[in-house]
Image (tube, rainbow, N blue to C red):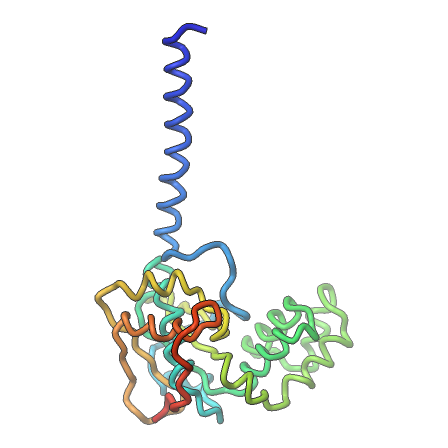
Length: 245
């Protein structure tokens, strides 16, 4: 092969390689800095009317839990990368105080039930399907007895450890009434993506479902403190201050 042909071949190889890198970097940027790894336990698309503690979504997410402030901040900071990636509309979230969603995360993490069963049953419940009908609705995907057992199990209060780790929140996707409901684990946050969001000159806003207190705002930079307590990043201990105060 002539030197000219070798030079052309090398040039094409470099172009193909670099082009792939550029595409990969752009895809990562568009995804808010997230990797392909899943960093939430439960996720589903929901109807979303308004970001407030008294909206329809806020009322549905209202329960008896006293959510620690660190978990409310973890919810808002977890939404930050989705906002950066244009997955969600803004940096506001409604933080759930429902114990059953935390219990669902506890059962998901325990491995007692298949993760897809937890996801599918929770989606059915959110969509208003009556409990006696859920097992039959999911009969093609899951064992009926397993679904029935899970429905009983999820009615128990979550343990103290679960209440200090798991938080459910909702965020708007767009102005058309679409949103997400997600449950995340304080111990398994997307540290790299949240750090990227923390570099933004913006704020994250938290509405606590069922709370009469004003929504709380934190600068994006405060999300660095949230992930500093992550087991992967030793640092400050999580605060037990209540988010609803």
